[in-house]
Length: 276
Image (tube, rainbow, N blue to C red; front, side, top):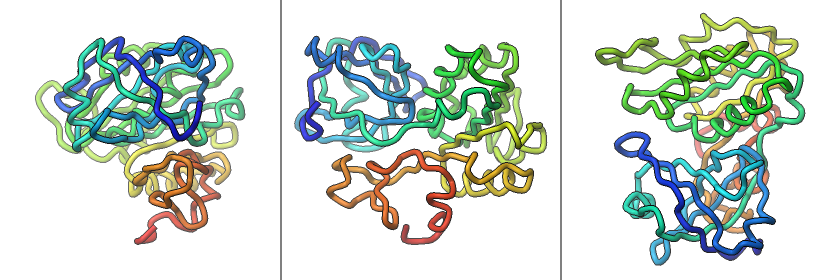
């Protein structure tokens, strides 16, 4: 694909996950383009609402099914609010995929700890689904997910299903609870006291608010996990997606081009510093 040009895609399926979050499954209308399209979990596309603008959205579907590309979107601005009004059969533009994905090949044979906060679960849901479809390649899978409110929890049915799979543990929390919320009330960081893992054979992948990730990394390091076994997906204002415009520059790196997935040692000097 020409990295500068959006290609037309048709909405094949639409799912309303919460009041403000929805998932679009897209098919490139050019058959040849659809056959040649490939991506890795953790990469993102630029979705273009014609005449309105573009937004970067992580790909949430499986790379072995590139003919139907899943994107989970929160309606928070002009472009995404417009996309929220689209229906099956409508068409938008796609550029991508961009960026560097998760180290899933390097993680084979190891235990995997997924840590997410808020809608940060969308970039790592592709990882969870990827591991579930290739369960024999990985060790124990631990999923730690936190949200502000129970109503923010998307994929709720999937979490219930994942928790029943052997060698898979799910820990969920909400900052404020509500009636019939069966899981922990408090910070996602609180859940680490319940999680047991062997740091020598584990790798962690996380996404969400930067403060949450910094706190989670501190706990993982205290429990002996090597720095090079921790990976994080960073979020910034990405516009061109190819490292030209500079909007997502992060020190000497670009989130869109060198990330969004980074090994912790690659970005640790900049984490938490105001202005970066």
